[in-house]
Image (cartoon, rainbow, N blue to C red; front, side, top):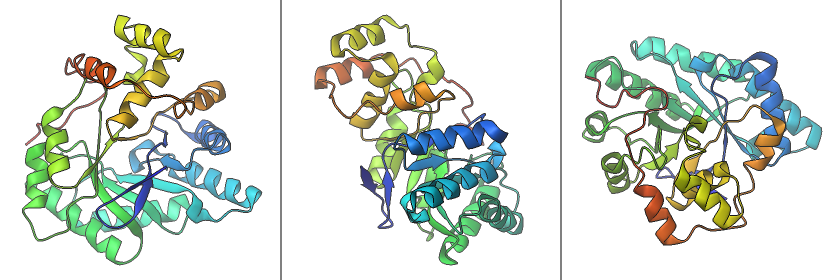
Length: 273
């Protein structure tokens, strides 16, 4: 199920996150995800697993005689440390994954200040023009950081990937992104498992005869987000796909929205200088 982006490309709305997966674990879990039907794999320079993710994609495509273009691959810039260094980092990511190009490349965070952010974005824009990157975007950017880019004459990011879930709704960032045609991608749709036992989540799981994780993922999709759950076991990887055979009632989505507590599950640089 693809979602259109402002640059004319599309992105599968359901993907597989690989944060904190490395070596054989990264290769195996990505392989299991692809076998389970995922066609969107999310990696990053920071994760140090680009090589394994790319190899799993290539091996899967070869085994099933399907083109590399059938799998959407994302990677991200680790450091905002100057135009030339960013260009080299992009080239290294393309080389390490072995896929020929990257479907979506994100500036991983806004840390470094306005000048560093702008130089990173210029480098990413230029790499896109060179064909190394199909679509480009940002991750964990706050409104101030996005305004800096929107107010230049450079392309507006296609995506902002950020932690979004019922316990961290980020209504202001969501509204700004929608106003400027920036697709939202949720990198912590499962709240890292921290709220599976919340009474409301358990009640909805019982009501819809689904697991707590499936309720959270269905919520993410119905909010219009691209969602990229991470799992490390084959059973969980498969279970997370079982979200397309039911729909949450609108009142239940509203009830989930009301759970917002500003919960940060990992890091939150959205207010950094």
